[in-house]
Image (cartoon, rainbow, N blue to C red; front, top):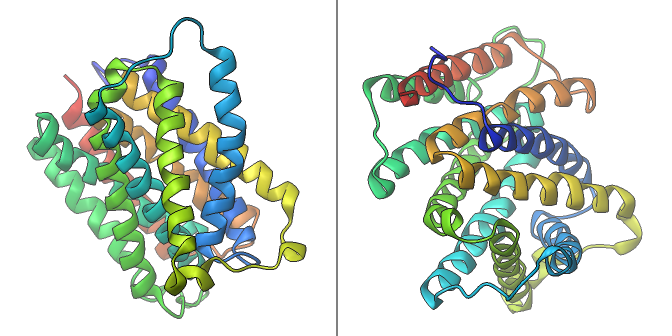
Length: 302
């Protein structure tokens, strides 16, 4: 099944992104107790932008890259859709479901990228990948029902959390497919900085709108700032750069599938770090979704 699978810089970056993303999500789960999702999203991305912009300028040598206006708008839109909107919805679903269950919902990410890559990038979607898609859907379906062993309670709003999470994951997939061609031809850090600028700008615009302003309100004294900075730099920042790097240096299909290892980290960290129950149904959901990922990976190999 793994024959023909080349493990290079793109694959390693995709795996590194999964590990750092899971770490950041566990921190975000803790931060969600004192910050509403929109405020958490704005603060995390704002902190990372303040660190990324001078780093990009410092590391860059030579003339500044000149992106066509169309590519600039595409990257900015990707940031608004994939970070400002999608991450806010993701944090809301995370609060509803917990890290472990949200990790399973996140497994819809690679099928979404595979499907969009097939539609817009000309990447093939074979029979094994369609089978994998069905298996992943089945794994996600397990967490919308109560836990079969009776040891772990079902979240009060499980279905709502799953639906919000599915929308968030679909938006993330669409946002990265949007910039795949730009990533292939432009410097990674510049695209990351521009995309993050679009996200922060979009969040600031939403925070300025009177109907949405209350969703960004929080008490600064209650925020664990060291944890927030760690989540921003490691979980949000490093993860995003590695994530985009995976798409730059390997195919969208392979990068998306390798990103799914984040669900293993999330389930384990949720159980060990946050004390979230690890039920037989949760384990079965992980097993089923990873069977689907294995099918998709086999189908994407040459």
